[in-house]
Length: 139
Image (cartoon, rainbow, N blue to C red; front, side, top):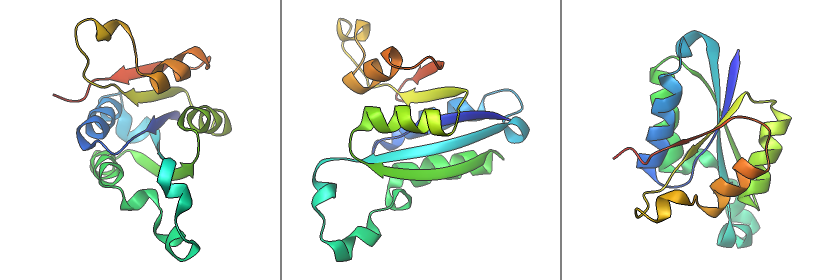
């Protein structure tokens, strides 16, 4: 089984581009397991305890759409969420689940900015020995 970690943010187009990459892998419907990860950051930490139960990745549209795309293509999917530092959570989950690759969603950049990745993407690439794929935003 080829296992990929797919950390998604709240951008639906990026999440779908990441999911399309996974479903385009050879024999994805039989040989690939995708772990979708959404990391809550910032104000999400300060929610009152009675609202914490609603803080789940399944409530995020980008996660739901990516999960649906993967499931429709027959890919085994697991949805995870975490809170805190995005880069650390990605690297920790990649290690914990012993993934074969990390599939990140790239942001659209200016011509000069294309030479430089975003801070999370760059940190993940520099701090893992695992293959990292950076997809576009789908446009």
